[in-house]
Length: 163
Image 1: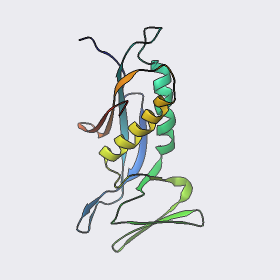
Image 2: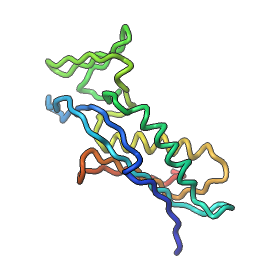
Image 3: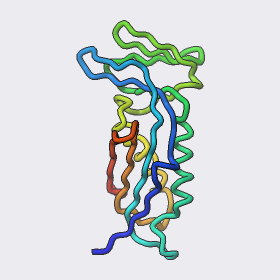
Image 4: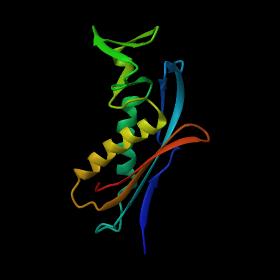
């Protein structure tokens, strides 16, 4: 079996962001930041130009998504341990006795349950998958996203592009 794959590496897909994650039973990390690096791999059939997908287009797609996260505080929309409220151009987050207030322009509320590397990878993968599905003529078999929050610590999201 022959397989074709393209990848855009973590050296060019980077963003810096702050986050914290909850652990259940009242556990919650302190607010901290990472210089995240992202890798993308697409597997699929070759098109008429002998490409799975254009490297430059793939990099631009991902850079657009990452620019929305860069230099922001990442907050989960659906974490049962947090209360997230928007008002007066601010986002207030509460966890037990902790209270954070961020300018709305400095935070991104993601449609995830926790801002783990796994959930960030899934968020980015879902966005890219939707973007690719809107392009006609693509035959993508598998899509993989790697989010490295620190060297040696990565999470992966892998999906069949058609699923």
